[in-house]
Length: 430
Length: 134
Image (tube, rainbow over all chains, first blue to last red; front, side, top):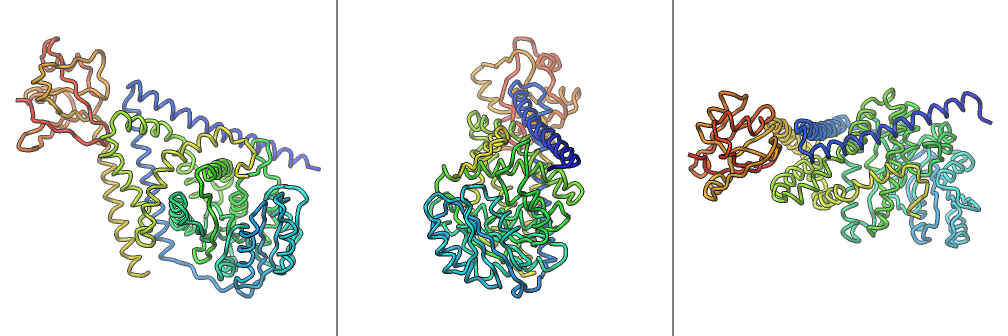
């Protein structure tokens, strides 16, 4: 039974969420209004100021990311070995291919570290239940199956609150992820120190070479993790621990599991972005969250555009939803993260709708200008932002540029669809 | 840090300031007037007249004398650039471009002569050069 205080808190949370959501819509409308102003030719100074502001914010963000990366390189932390610590590895699954699941579980079983492995079947309907049980018995894995599908949050909640016995750390691994031999001890090593509540591993694609799309996505993953996430990690403010491979202190998880399970957004239960919400809850409690590039896991990305777009649509909804949550606490705990989310993650994409429309119009009306000027200057900025890739993974650079173009012309618009369908609760990749 | 890292950071923090300066300089190109295709327009003897106020897509083609008149009256910056042996006058209005009829008046042209309308290069676009009108 909820107390009066809890109900009041829920009402304030709902009010806050609607206010921020309205702000998002307002930003979108302002951007569209600016674009129409531009079309009519009225007030050109306002359009100039708008486009200059956009460019300057992009530039400022690039400086910020590079400075944080440099900071992280200069004071690279070292962590003691955690190989003697007991680790609980939770693998939630739903309708996973038995072959992929077996690969994942065997890799976890072979990985270094003292561990208890927990497999939670979230009501799979593909007939793999008995095979999973047999596999779990063979590998000495704790197995629990829900009679019906309840969602990943329930699976994780159940495992954390009921199935873990003696471990101090929890590693969450997706059911299609193969972990490197040292991944478990490396990803939990930072948790031995004070102040760090969660860690995120380096996710690579084991089907990266399958086709052009997977190569583009692989390049994007590297850039997102080794540039953006790494820059956040230098200040302990990684915004999202990858669901494919992440680690948490059990003591912290147990404190946040209730809030995690019962999260609501705009009055509806949440079914997206468990990984980001869990990370948010850890950051909210005042802990640092870091990226551990030495902890490597290999996962699978959708290999068709349809599947990939559905996945991205789900991620974008979760992204917007979790950004609202981040803004509610980060101004106190992590001011820089607050600024980054507010300005770069939310305001810039939504306010740049007008610029994007103008870009498309320019391509149609003045293609020479686009090809001779806009495109080269955009490529130049992208290369600067991805400069670490030039040194460490040069072969991926064309894939990244291709992904960025794809993102600009296709994925960007999913943000708008996500904004307008934010209350959609369906898990659309199923 | 390893040597490769040092080179990486050296390169990043050399290129970033260059790009930053380029973006900041772009702000000075608030409204650029370029003298473009003037000779073509002159030869075709068709000076386009646009109704109403100037929009950011309109420019005027000016002679050296006209450039002086405009410079005396408005806050603008003039540069003379040599391209292929020709002297090109480029005018930049620091504020909004005046209305067409005002420019006509200032340049002492009659109402029928009009002003050649040429594409204005907006922020960031490359300039298009043509020989200055004599």
